[in-house]
Length: 253
Image 1 (cartoon, one colour):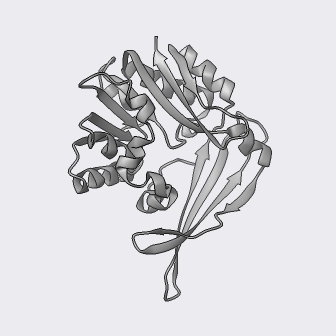
Image 2: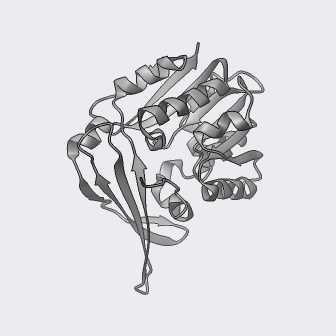
């Protein structure tokens, strides 16, 4: 089994974030609709926080934010970003199953699990455990916000190499981004994504950082059933079988 760490990609992850969501304030603004549902003095968990753009953006609005990630490198980068923006974010290294070890049940008004992260949970059992942990941390009436790839589309395209058709500029450097998909025969099998970021220097050298990641895809209706199983009721979903990604908002019954 390939261990999903993101320790290599953490150093260059900004090349994978869209221009529109790179500024923390803009990342947070993309969730204005659900953030408007928060009560005063809300507590929010950004689970699988990545490099911290969302967490820092939320903290910039005066929201009490905790950010967690299974990758130590991602947690470090989140802490660095919060320091850069002078935002108050508590960053904790923890995978989904470890969340109840760090926080009491019914602690948060909203939990975010965005950035297409849930597919890294190991199969139906791992995904169920992850959702159960996040549900436990929500207060009654609290909401879980999940973004997901449309895996029905991903699997239909089969194993392949996708190379972005434009250079991405970050920190004064250009890079080419490539995704190599290893699509397994069955839905429940372990799949792999290798992500490579090739930084191109004007003088000629190319610096490549890549990481092979494990993933376990799921159908949209399976995710809906999983949410229901852990006591969450879907309030809204942008699922479209022809769209690349979708968002689900589910409330704790």
